[in-house]
Image (cartoon, rainbow, N blue to C red; front, side):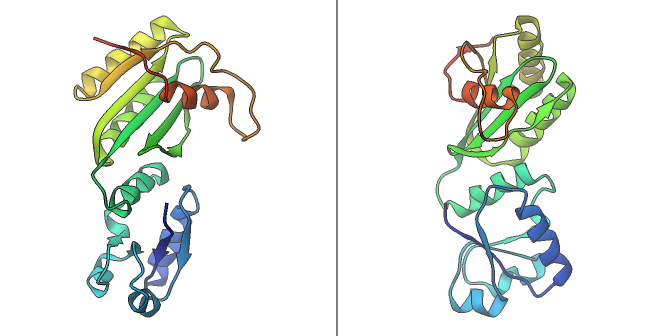
Length: 198
């Protein structure tokens, strides 16, 4: 993934952009607007008022979501300059539910949730606000009743999403990345082909 540029003369917008970018997996560099224009740097995140100053791909902070995970997907969808990407969401059911979100094979984040409703809301927000060609939600089968409840609520809210139930054997292992077992399991589940839920 190429470097993202941050270029704005608005100090308040600059602080907002930098604060949010630091919570993503994106690599970014700070530039003066003049330097960004001179180098034809792209993509550049700036303000809506300044987007016309750049001859290259510029993204206004006002059109990006406040949630860093969703914002990262929105930036990637513009920065990749390719067709929209596949959205993969892995879910590890349980008392605490791990979720892993990938866009075009790149990880956007691994949040955890304590309720099916909060999980459903996050999945809905991700699917509705990140441009994609296809979206898959893959749910582990370790807790059958909960897996079914999650699948049903997602299908009801997002009928165009492909929902699959995945064999989650061997997904809960210790790791050294600072993630919980739920998050690690969700990452593995996201990339496992499952049985389509109907």
